[in-house]
Image (cartoon, rainbow, N blue to C red; front, side):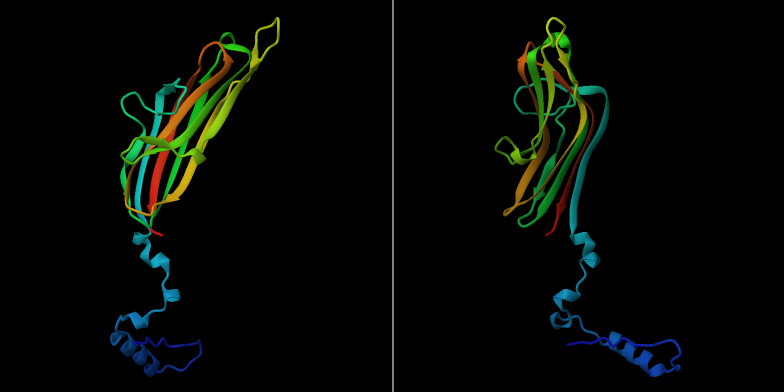
Length: 211
């Protein structure tokens, strides 16, 4: 096994060329064999390019907010294309991180809310591996706009304008090619009309890791 001898010089030591020459000789004669390394001696910071393999993102501000009124999960669309990341291939044994962050608000008017009505806005991360779009159920985030009856006055309500951040860490056991999406839906309870959800800013990114 090759050994590099590092001189242990201290302030005040007499000048001596022998420790320096021994160090130079040990470096010159060093052979990088498997027996020369201990696993605990390898710092992962030295192999950074092998840790983060991929990074993709979607970032946009919309002067005309994205709008959806669907009652079942659908992909957010900017009017010309779905907000998606992909296709990306995650090799077996690797992990990936998804994060979506956006601002949204509901278009709600008192005349559209029935007594004790409620609007629910639900968001989640979705994916497609070639067999149709599915939702990561563990990523669901739900927000509500609540109305209550105040007869004879008009119904009153709380308007929900908020921001939402959804994150997911996952890994794969076999090579998998994905398309990732932001999914949304709106539901109504005791309301006269379905209400709109509008999104005016989106930040969506994906990072793949070696683990």
